[in-house]
Length: 194
Image 1 (spheres, one colour):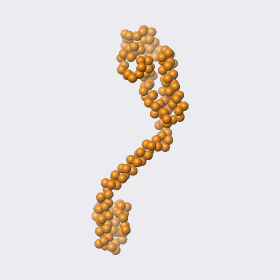
Image 2 (tube, helix red, strand yellow; image 1 turned 180 degrees about the horizontal axis):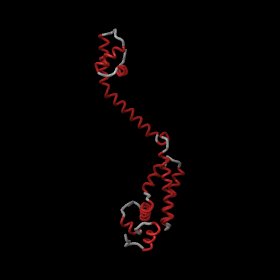
Image 3 (cartoon, helix red, strand yellow; image 1 turned 135 degrees about the vertical axis):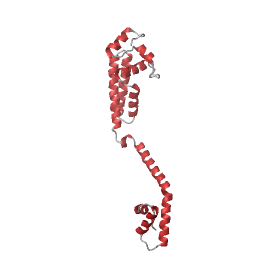
Image 4 (spheres, one colour; image 1 turned 30 degrees about the vertical axis):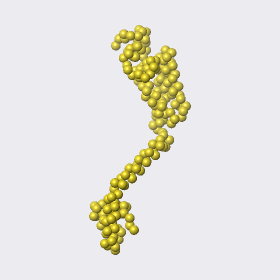
C-alpha cells in the first residue's frame, strides 16, 4: 500500500523500523477506532494495536479491574508505565514508547492473573453471599411448589392412622408411599408423626 499523505520520512520509518504500512496521517484517516481519544493518544493506540497487537482499552480495563482489589503499588506501576509510554510517543521516541507500552501490558496481565487466582473469600465476599442467598431463595421456591403435594401426604397419613390406630409408623408410611407412588423415606421425611 502506498502512502499518499504524510511525510516520506515517517512512511519510510514505519515500513523499515516497525513494519507497518501506513504513515500517521493515513492511519488516522483510514481508521475510525478510538474516536474518544485526542489525536496523539488515538494515534498511539492505533500504532500499539497494529505494531504490537496490544489493545489499549483492554489494558485499561485490566488495570481498572485490579484497582482496589490488588495492592495499590502494582496498579500504580501499571498506570505509570502507560503514562510514560504515551509521553514517550508524544516526544517522538516511538520505539521506546512501544517498549514501555509492552511493559505496561505485561504488568496489566500480571494484575489480571493475580485477580484470576485470588481466593473467592478475598475476591468477592459479597458475590458469594448473593449466590448463596439466591440458592436459598430457589430452595424456598421449590418447597413452596411442592408443599401442596406434601400436604396431601400428611392428610393421607392422618386418615390411615385414624382408620388403623394399631399400625406401626413404618407400615403407615409404606401404605401412603404405595398410594402416591413414592418411596417410604420420602414420606417419612416430609410428614409429621404426632
